[in-house]
Amino acid sequence: MYSHEVLEHFLHPRHVGTIEDPSGFGQAGGGERCPDDLAYIWIRVADGRIVEIRHKTLGCPVAIAASSVTCEMALGKTLAEALAITPEAVIAALGGVPERKANSTVAPKALRAAIMQALDRNGQAEQQDASTD
Amino acid sequence: MREPPILDAQSIRADFPILQRRVGDKPLIYFDNAATTHKPRQVLRTIETFYTTYNANVHRSPHTLGLEATELYEQAHENVARFIGAADAREIVFVRNSTEAINLVAYSLLSGENERLRLQEGDQVVVTVMEHHSDLVPWQRVCAQAGATLKVIDIRDDGTLDMEQLSAALTERTRLVCCAHGSNVLGTINPVQEIGRLAHQAGALFLVDGAQSVPHMPVDVKQIGCDFLAFSGHKMLAPMDIGVLYGKRELLQEMSPFLYGGEMVADVTLTGATWKEPPWKFEAGTANVCGGIALGGATDLRTGQHLEGAVDYLERISMAQVRAHERALTRHALQGLRDMERVRVYGPLDADRRGGILAFAVEGSDAHLVAHLLNDEGIAVRAGGLCAYPLADRLGVAGTVRASFYIYNTEDEVDRFLEVLEDIVRCRLL
Ligand SMILES: Cc1ncc(COP(=O)(O)O)c(C=O)c1O
Image (cartoon, rainbow over all chains, first blue to last red; front, side, top):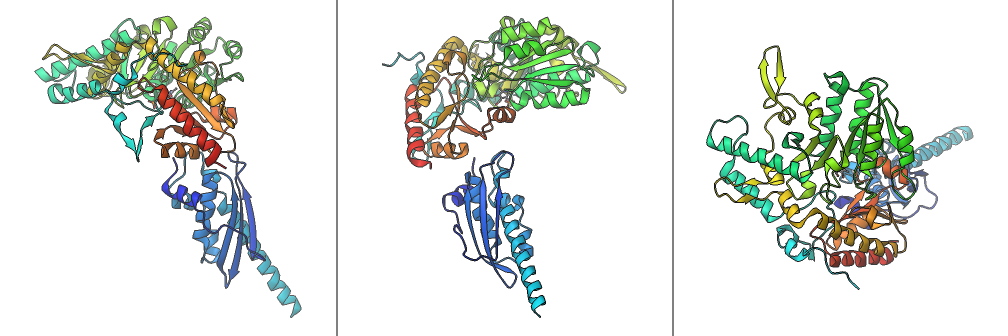
């Protein structure tokens, strides 16, 4: 059965939406058993911290609740801290998920991709800054 | 028009206190009977009587209570033997549940002192894709340890077993065929008599997982001709933690024990031990004596009245009536589910070929979510992989919702379930 947390986040997902001109964007799909789960995550970074985060998620209640909780966990964290958010941590925050549903927590993967893009862009920007010097 | 009811469900319901419960502000509709069933007052009274009058350890304590508890416990074995048509009580081993019964056979065959009853490298064990994990995982483990191969028989598109594939799979190296009598997902009732005949023709032993059949229909081990039958008391009105392994007497005689320790030994020295006769050599340690009596029933030695066990309760109704009642409910529910848009039912569509178990999926929706929405209306069902993940994979479905019936369910409850489900499918899911 779904935990109280899963139902709560599924029925009232937090941080839904998109960010115009984000610092980073990432997406991730479901694994072997949940090919339909899909999460998009946008982040805005300032001073090395995630100051805004939005997601759009398609899929089962676990996928949607996981995106909601992942965003809650990531907001305000440094990029390094946010990179450390694992599916296991999200599942724990959700109070557990039913059998064979662990793969539906796709949001941490999408977040990781968004962070990598932000770091990448930041690196390129620094390089550009350096080359214009 | 409605058929007249086969059972007097209302008077049966009065025996089950839990059915008066409400879930939130809704009356409970309990459709999770394949997971476990409720217990009637008669069985609860037997449990109380045991602990208030007879509680003692069996086969060891030389005092009145110990002797009386032993007598009741042995009677319970006899009653269970009669219930499944076994030749005698020595063929009835009380275990915790079906899972332990199957593990008993598996580990006994793995470590058998008797070569004839030991799995050898290159041997084959045959199971089906519709097995519950309990009748699959032990064989995976034991085959891996013995160097034996595990052959899995597929189903046909209609959810019945592929008998041709089974027949072709049997070789002279096949030592054992294991098969669920009733599938806990598809509801399919397998032709165990025919499977047993094929297994024996190939010189193999035949184990029937009766967890979903013994509670629901007449099952006679002599008629089936199986070597082993496993089932769980908690799925047939008895408490949890009491189950049964039936084994043919000659086999139990020759097989090695599964658990070792007290109670199961005839003699022990510092260097070794010998075993009691079956069934006791397979009942190591203190047994669930009360559970056994609550399953099989026994005579109240102090009043001469009968302490009713689950088996007595079912026999009073008659297993043929139990089956007929569930078949009528299943037919009714099947009709309603088949008419519902976006709902897909798994397993045979003919109620004569299936038990009272209906697993279905709602297209584009999540099984756990449907179960939650049903629960909001007081309807208890199961959802997910149903302890048969390989079967879910075979069906290509992430999870199903399962409604399963028993003697105290009514056609009105099925109607309410169909009405709520229809509303969920139409209005409450995307
Ligand atoms: C077909 C089948 N076999 C075995 C089992 C295992 O029963 P238990 O959990 O009582 O050991 C079940 C229970 O769900 C079942 O449905």
